[in-house]
Image (cartoon, rainbow, N blue to C red; front, side, top):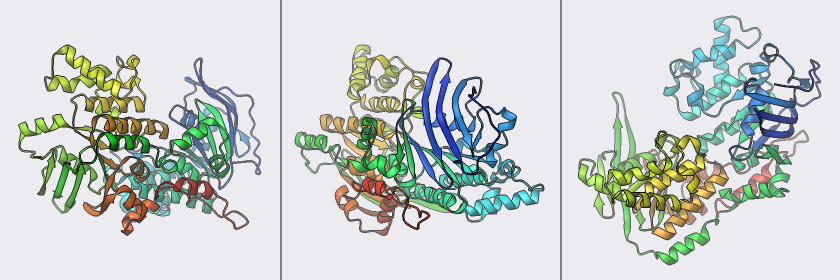
Length: 570
């Protein structure tokens, strides 16, 4: 890191973190351009923007995790009034943990899978002054686990990561971050992989910590709804440049920059009727004729282990008319993915039947399944793991045609080109491999691959959950246009009710394998009959982030959150 100055003085009245004119470059390529902001005690500031906007680069510059040999950092970073950019690594190291805490995005890759939580926590506990013995450190760990709302903290400490849920693992990461007593938490997309109800619990926990302990939070997120509901101030970034900054309510209710307005337009909750014109065109071209393309009739699936049974599906029924979209909604463990796998013939049902185009899905009929899958394809949640990294885009899309021996080489090339044109992937990208594509581009390739065989039905398994709102909007527009043009039938699996409101015609709400309620999207989301559905709606980040200010009045971003809420239940 290169620096303008260095100081050991600390100003008790200064913000916890003050960033001024921060510039980051890799070689000759500058990726962050003169960004400034400050985070005060007990306050939350959100860095928001699309992938590549510089959010995580700024966070890692603050934590000095960029690597001095690769990155050049100019400008000023002050922690509690002390300039730190000129500190040597050995001088900066004591700040990590004790002053600057870090909550990473993915607990699955942040925790060692072959060590217990307790053994991994000893490093964090060792940072606590006065905790010299193993017993003292164990006591601190158990107190931290209990503080973040984990029951049976000793059991958690004795567990391996794979034995805990995603929400539990994220709480563990927060416990490890707060254990040494930091003044500032840097939280990098801390809820991006979590269900809405678990997400709300984690965000409530972060709010509690900053309110009760005075911890400041630097929140990195691409989810504008979370920023609106949980941050006191926001910094909007595009391509490493600050587009807009200020109090959350001001930025979201009266954005000054065109980029911020464009981001807002892509938030599902703010624009629930975004795809209404395309869907109206679909209805005109493909009138609803009540022909059932996909049907589930009382399907049941139980998983058994030595000591227990888990009923993943319990008498679930739904029907999807030809050319329409049905959503399966629910938390992890609700049975959504099990139903999708059963539809693809990857699970054997205990009872009930599944039909596609009038044909019963029978996992024991290999020839029948092969023919079924020609007409039914899946688009997975994570295209990075579902696409072969060794192959070019064109070969990936062509592969299903080769497997089914469709046409000759020229005809297969033409069919692959058609599919790639259908998802609007530029021809210049078709010779690349997945690693050279963005997340949105990879998802377009995954959709094109599914389209290549000209199927009747697509199973969409959380196809946009890992994407920025702008990229997500582009993918949903592609899918809606394809349904309009080709009359495709979609089974859409999602936990995002804002997206479901925009995209689906009907939905089924699942909980622990059972149907809670079902009906048209408008009916269910406007007037949910069941408490569980109401709880899912209440978990959407739409304004619960208001906090009590010093005067006792609400001093948070509730107004901005209420604006985001407007489109979800209407």
